Image 1 (cartoon, rainbow, N blue to C red):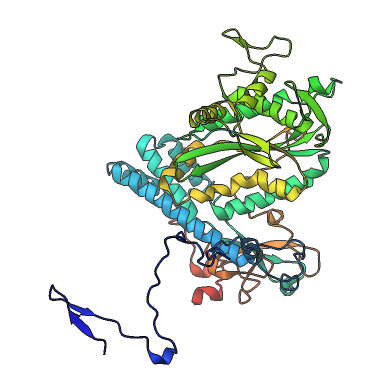
Image 2: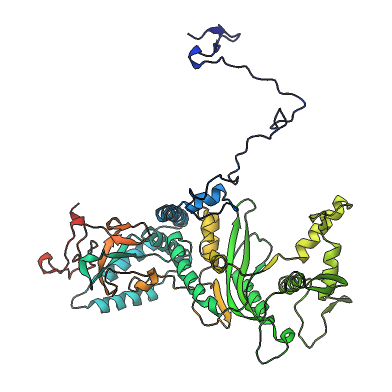
Length: 551
């Protein structure tokens, strides 16, 4: 038994005995920490403390990776884990994010409903149910027209309309992919397993629908890559802002269009300097949310086609009295033009036939901005790399930081070597917004801001090409869901009916099919909607029940 002693306050204090002999060693007492060795450092000095960094190189052979990696370039733990994920694992992650988003939207709806007085919204729903009831000798089409006319005449506005909108969003997310449309191959019959197409919700933040929309948009961009002679990816950013609204997206989009118009290439003009050097492309607006600072960051990714390729790093030019790379000069010019569209301090870009803008006796030109940027720089080239400037006080460093925050913009320009990676970068707006789907304070303002806003647009030679597919799913067209190949190769698919979520399964390649026990002649497990008062008798109905309903 463990010995015990009586403490001064009368409590019984147990004293741990020696380590049991069956473990082979005795319990060691705590070692004294040396005052010389700092906390967390190794006592021997030969090695540092144990690291929990998951970015450490994973020692995996080429055979274990299935030949996907070479011995010259090893994979990190995170990269290896992402590569090992299956289609089912990725779907589970998206499904959990969708449930989280639905919970957030439900919380917003409940908060607005509890704050509103009862009676008005409930009476509107009761009147709607009354209108949906079929009348004597009224066709289904006439009933739908009558209900739609009543909705337009009795449209809810104000607080009741806001509650109804969030309620519909919750129902939209809750029923996403709850039903599937089945298709069977009429050409080869039972030799091909029937395929299933989900009925999605098309919500802006739904991970399941956004992933499908992004895949379709990527396929369209890849097919249009053949038109690009010199593809370049340009990123334009602005400082973070505490709030986000629809006007912010409208203003940002107008600035991007003005920026592209400045560099638009005109074939009728021979001089490239006067006609510009961007022929066309596609741009997308992306929004991120900083959880720590509670701020929003709106930026733009532009996939553009240039008249000529970007200059190499060996080509030099003279800029503001110094010899710099031609690529650096182009990047600084893009940054200066984008800054003048966003900052009133430098004014708007003047016309080509006008003198540079003057204010308080100072000329706001490109070379002066470059010279000031060199004087206010925070890093300099030293010892083979960019390091903080030495020999300045903390006050001067703070002043330089403030000047750069107001008079500089983060702009990235790079040639496109990986076309799939460029397409993913442009279309990140479709999937990245799910990062804040668990925050009601972020979901509500974002949904209000992007309501009816166009976040992706083609321009120039690409103008008119449809990149972003419709938000609503179209289960009648199988080409929206990839190549569905049957056994015989004729691909004559015909619609079977609507099935529940439990009636479908995914194969190893990520395709969805109806479960094997579903009959090819089944009309679906979801009953057809009927009009109240005109419901047909069971023996007169042409609906064929499926064995799934008997379970």
